Length: 106
Image (cartoon, rainbow, N blue to C red):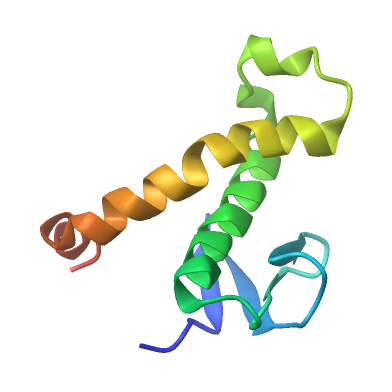
């Protein structure tokens, strides 16, 4: 199956495009674009897309950050500490539960 060209996050359409870069992915919130590096295996691209979606969600819901993370001054580090906690586990839950995926998005 092909990578989606658009992902809707809280009603906002984000274009998803391939882009060769030094990172696995990056998100431009101001332009609603998510870039995925095509040089990585497809499984990594899928996790990277989830990772980038989590960035968008975190920016939209920044006020809900747990107090334990608010003391970290480096915004990028803070985001990645939170997102890296969930990207692979969330991917694996969705990957391993086709019935759940079907029920959620059937």
